[in-house]
Length: 143
Image (cartoon, rainbow, N blue to C red; front, side, top):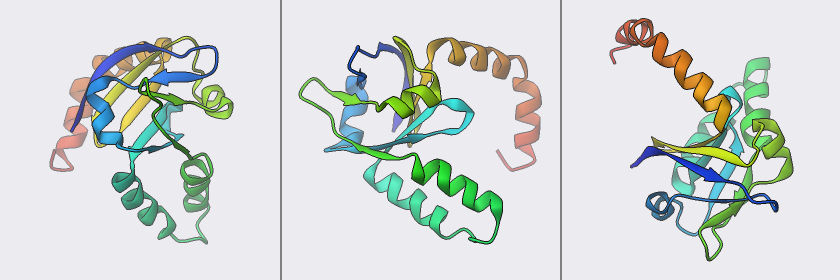
């Protein structure tokens, strides 16, 4: 289970250290892709396979299905941890998420999200301000 929020830095070569407590989840490697809300998602192999199967099962004739597949699948890349527990974040993904030197690495149970530190603080503040309304809407879904 992936939980917690960590502040890390991306070096000049685009390498990001994955928090030590998250490394076992990634095993030999992971999938790094464009996420929602302009962050990056990191999935372990098993979680990625499950999600990818659902995505490819979406109806090809629906524009939203094609768009989502292009975002998630077309933006994905395999990553491997180096000896220091770092992954290389390609330029196109760093640009997509606006990643600069300082980033936030957040564990969200079955995936990791990587955020621009400023964008994370803004998003978190906005979400915390509307937490009661969000909770009420989610209660209608049985949460």
